Image (tube, rainbow, N blue to C red):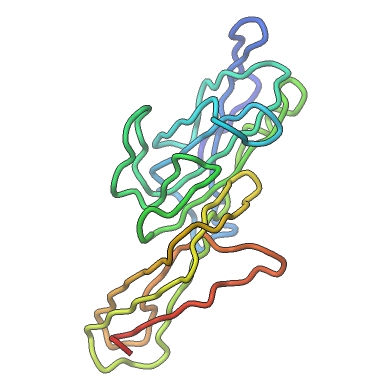
Length: 227
């Protein structure tokens, strides 16, 4: 999706520091239903160390998947978290856009801000500057950060005015470092309208799903036209 970077992109910023670029892409359609080419918000958080802990040294949001001229300390170990979705980037020090479907202000605890209509993607890069292969850790491939749930009607409906209300009993936040989920307070309700009598998909939810061994989906309730 984006141009690659190579050793020529690295600049010397003085003793012990260098700058490089990170290029972020979504799996190119291999693991998705279609190629993802229209993402509008990319988020990067930089942590010094082997894990993402505490306050990030950098939290940056932008409209493209190339994070250029990132200054790094030589011989330093880093964990860098990435997020991408269809929202509007938040300016440095600014307030998030109220229309954003996901709250990505802390990628250790990303949450759904409002009923999503589109998916979100996440990934990370973990490396030591000057030790690991730069060409490998600067090319970051994101995968799904949320589960897609489709609600399908298998028989024709009697009315072309239909409402589907779905309730999930639990909700979760996502730590991009390791894809760890944490249960948070609150039942989640998603509402869909379906203006047709025809067989079809009544609505599509995106949720941060619980993980485990085995992975288990939630027991949900659904009401169609008060039934």
